[in-house]
Figure 1 (cartoon, rainbow, N blue to C red):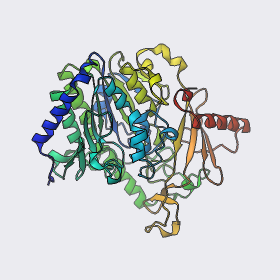
Figure 2 (spheres, helix red, strand yellow):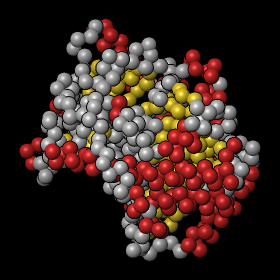
Figure 3 (tube, rainbow, N blue to C red):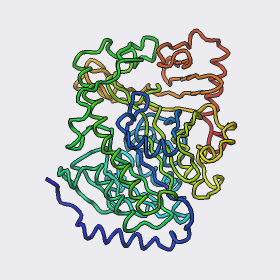
Figure 4 (tube, rainbow, N blue to C red):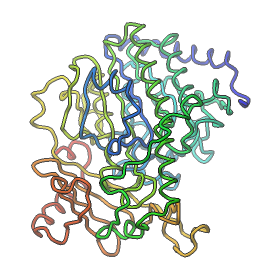
Length: 504
């Protein structure tokens, strides 16, 4: 049953007061386009992760634009979400992993990075701003201000405390604790986020507005809504590409994976794959309901709607059962669909667009001069509304990740020794301290990926994705050394870039 929660009447009163308190600022921004970002969690695109999203593909993708080459600049939740919020590469926002010690929602993050997130800029431009769902993995930790901390830039704040959950969670409703239990009609988080956003639109929204909806799907614990638990009953993870293939010429972390995988591992990842799709069906409903409400309020034509994920995911690729954190396409490619004013329907873009480009694009929509922001990304609004801007777009970009490990031995896998983490199932480890890498990913004139690891070997991986789209063969030892040197120099420049110097 549902636990004790913030009284509904008080919640409504709080929302009214907050909305009224921002009325003066909002009035100054009338006439600008509204912005909605729907941000899924762990949703891949390379393994068919958009298959459950039929309404989303119809209502956003076919009604607007799809980006075939959308990427996250780092494949882990908190660093990636920090990149989205700040428009910055990890080497500039300094969030290394999902822990407080790794700067995830830490006091230092709150002091030095939150003042430069995109909602802060939009709120100063008169936007009324609304957030609901997962923010950063350590949000609400007592060591980082607890639920009383409301990040800068949000008129109304409904932030999930901690990592993704579907039931039995705590929210911060503008700094006040709101506990929820396990009653579907009241507590299922994806639906609660949907309902609160509809209430905001119906009762209190003043244009222009920014709405960010961040549901838990398709993150663990993969709890589907009751009416979707029988969906995709016979589905299994894709068996093609790099599935159950040994990473024989890859970094040692990939080489330690057990190939062929055990039957128990395969059954486990198949169950996860199915459950992930089931959870996404409620997100698909969210998209439909939000767009229906915009249409009913005559706001659809003046609102940009973005759909994406924080990063990708894998289920059995290179014999790694389930997780993210790796440099390969399945972990860094994300869905990106956009509809809104000036965007023609059924457009597909091949230009590489990054999650650090979302913030600059929102600022561009709001009419802000990008020189006022330290963001590393670039606005892709010109791509959406003016095809002539395509020629000067980037051709390559940076991917970076800082590995996580345990200082002691994993009690479930004592033979592995210290330094590894995320060892499940069958003691196959998904991460390690020296799973720390930086990559240059190029899409033209060549489809390459070049990666350097920060380990004692200075291990290098290099892939030609034209001839090897599944990244099966590391050709670092066989390509022309001058090409490796060229890629190394490009990587050094990227790792030192900040702001406009990242646009080279």
